[in-house]
Length: 218
Ligand code: ADP
Ligand code: ADP
Image 1: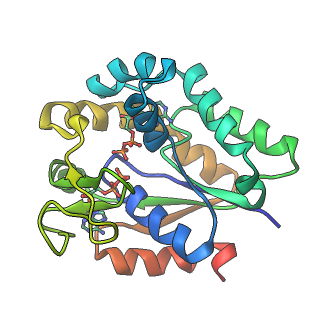
Image 2: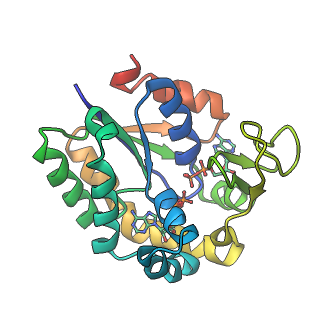
């Protein structure tokens, strides 16, 4: 049976970090809307050009563009077994579109881990985040440093700081999260798929808690 997981949580909660670890352990593909946008920006596609002004301002990219991009990704063969969705859905319209697209192939959302972290911790995490240019692996200058500063442990490629992790943009992204994405917590709770995970502890402990609630990994 396919397994679909939606990682829910504020920017900086640890969704990407945990999705990477879960993808390794479950063999499910990691589908990150932010990574898909960044790839489009890097390759200077039409979508990348349309999306970049929103991303730079810490606003959400419009639903129609975002939904199309993610639905296309989910239609690829590797997602026939399900996916770990990270950063999508972020609005009610996206959540409805996701339900609809999964239903077309008889799939559904099985579990929605909501990674909870206090707001002041989010800012520290985002402003210290460094990401691998090549593989997207996520580090933190103090909380999860690479063995060698500025270099990815996995592929030795260069690490970079995301332009939208500047302090000014971070504040707006957190505000946008509370306004537009936080309502999804109740949406998934009502459907009985939400599981709250305390994200304010070591990466490894959060990962163990997640593995305990994910069907594919049991
Ligand atoms: P999100 O995808 O939810 O925005 P990330 O996974 O990118 O979050 O993590 C944001 C930053 O916080 C990164 O620098 C990451 O290394 C760090 N981080 C993630 N999880 C933890 C944790 N449990 N404790 C401390 N730092 C963490
Ligand atoms: P984070 O991991 O810190 O939450 P992401 O990498 O998920 O950040 O997203 C970076 C930016 O990409 C967002 O601030 C937003 O501009 C855009 N974005 C990503 N996912 C979505 C989405 N589902 N809907 C609209 N915009 C999105």
